[in-house]
Image 1 (cartoon, rainbow, N blue to C red):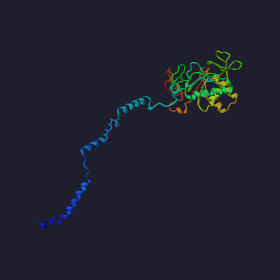
Image 2: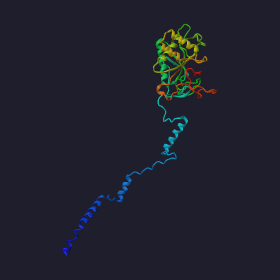
Image 3: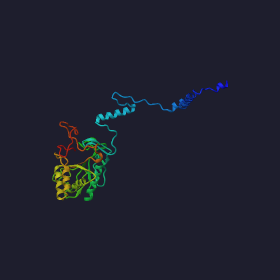
Image 4: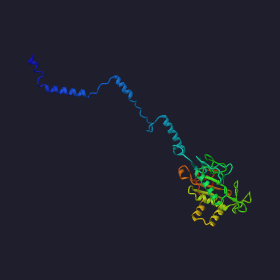
Length: 322
C-alpha cells in the first residue's frame, strides 16, 4: 500500500499541477480587497456629488444660473439702447457727451478767491482742467497789473445737463467770463455784473463811463492760450471786441505763433451777442477721450430744440452756441 501511494502524483502530471498552482496564486494577489458596506458608505460621503451639466438653449449657448441670466439680460438691454454694453461708469471727473447735449460727472466747483469773483447765482461746476485754468489765468492778470479781479458767470450746474439761459454749458467745459474795465480816465475798476461794450470799447449801458480794458483783457486771452495744462478750443466774443484785442496784440508785437493762435481761437457769432462777456470752451481732456464729444450738435432743419441730432459744429459753423 505504501508503495502505491509513493507513486502519486504520477510524474507525468507534476509539471501541469505546478503551472495551475502558480496561476491561482497570481490571480489572488491581483484582485482588489473587498470592502465592507460601512467603508463603502464612508467613501460615498467623502465624494461630492457631480453637478449636472448646463443645459443648452436652442441657440446652442449654455444656460447658467438664473442670477447670471438676469445680469446678462440687463446688460443686453443696455446695449440695445446705447449700441454698446457698458460694464460700469468711468471713475473720476468726466465730461460726458457734447457741450449742448451731455452731463458732468464728478465736477469741481469754482469758488471766489482774491483774484476771481463768482457772480451771485452763477452755476460754477466744471471739469478740474477748466476750473484750475480760470484760477491760473486770473492770478496771472493780477500779477501783471495788480488790483485785478476776474468776474465769472456760469460754467455748468452740478451733474451737468441743460442749463437755463444757455444752449451749451452742459458738460463742464464752458464758462462765461466778464470783461476787465476802466473808468473814463483809464483807472481799473471792478465790475459787479456783465457790461456790454461796442467796437470802440465804450459801454453800451450803465455805467456809461466804463471802458473796455484792452490791455488786461488781452492779458487774460494770452494767459489762457499759453497755459500748457489746458487746451483752449474757443474764445467767443463779439466781432468788434475781437478786432480790438487782435489790434492790441499786434501793437504789442506779440510772437507770431501766439497771434496766429489768437486769430484761430477768438471767434465771433454773426449776431451782436457776446459783447458783454467771453465764452470760453476747453477741448476734451486726454483722460476723457471716449466719453467726451468735442463739438456741439447742430440743430436739424426745422427742429426748434437745441441739441437735436445732427453733425458736430466747427469753428466755421453758422451757429455758435451760448
